[in-house]
Length: 481
Length: 111
Image 1 (tube, each protein chain N blue to C red):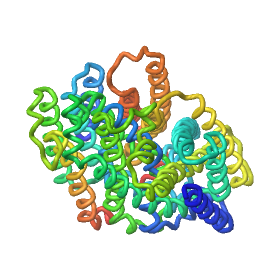
Image 2: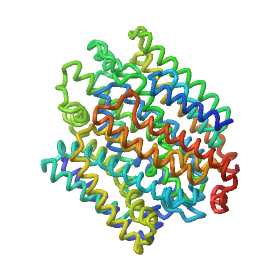
Image 3: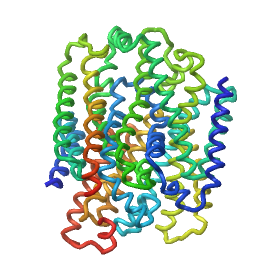
Image 4: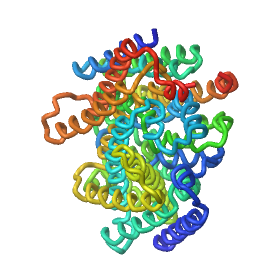
């Protein structure tokens, strides 16, 4: 049954991939889905690109490890959509439709008139993409390992093969079409997982009783992570969401600003429904383990597979697996597309190269990115959620200042963009390395320190720059009007 | 003015993070979110309501963590602080932000 449902699902994705390959005529189709998204495609496509293995596998795992405090990572989902629209929608849509920008580094080049800043943004995007893709592959490995009789290696290759086919061949068009299907599956599965998690563990009352009886502080607002860490996650993920290229580039794909009226509401509702997996499966499994009804999982990340094998009803299991695989794949294809664009167009341009046959180069770069992410996924010994936080932080620290403030603050110039992107990238990577080596001296998330520092650097350099260069170049001013 | 507020709020978050003061970080973080929303032309009334509401909920949560309140008090089966966290930071902002965006949409589009 598992195999039948799984194979049907993969065949549907391949069918969509074939359809998208036929419809992909140029780079605009490949990188921006032809700029023709309406509300009903924009919402599931955006939600599916955000809600990933990080939420469906890493979330319950982190809840199992540190309790309710982990939920601060996803709690801002109810308002970040509106914040993103207010700050980014108009300038991004304008730069895409009127100036022909296809990617976030294109936007930075057009806004700041600086090839170096655009190149640095491409490097930051590539770094984050490889990290995030490794998160997805790691989650996929954990899931397929427990799902198929093939064994972890062949199962990962099977999933990866389908992913490579439809995302590398069909580009963003395939990504968006499959996201719509995957988003619908994710919503349905998330609701069922939450329902059966509560039903299997005695409801909220039963979960609370199990935590209290075991003397665990896992259901306090900060869980076992502590207030400082949780607040750090909250601010990192709420402000940093403005610098996630695979999410904000969806705003460059819309056909009309009117599409956005109900977008934040629908996005928030769909993301909150997916967030129920984090709460339900995480709290349910931990309470059952505390009660002695379930054995402790070997790794916290195995919490979701433990739920599937021991708590969920048999008929739900294949669909639940497909739902989680959908979450992983839908995000992975967005990342590959964004990374391929950064490597084949933007980085090449930063070095003064102009590649012909961009779609072909985009496909080649997708394959290289998959290979690098695979190596990182196998080599990393981090939990899925921590690997996800690391990747999120690199995007957030490097790109949020130039996008969230730079697209709204006319006076900011190229030096602000250059220095903040480099600061964000260097600090998010450097501080994470220190933490990995055990010599990071602070309790707060390294990503938050990197984000706050790069925002401060952008504002301060921008203000200094303004006093030396009060009039922006004509091209930059035009892109802000 | 928004420039000064944003820089000040970011410094509060930085100081709170480096010197392990959750209260300072919470205050700075709410300031950062509010300043960014204003920068993105969100209605000021919304930002004021959001700022006061979020700061209030965070203050309650920090206080409840510090003072170890009676955990036997439950709301909808959850310990009271967990309930207020989910209601105050997760559910209520859904009513404040996206609904305000819909209400303000025509003004924002014309702007």
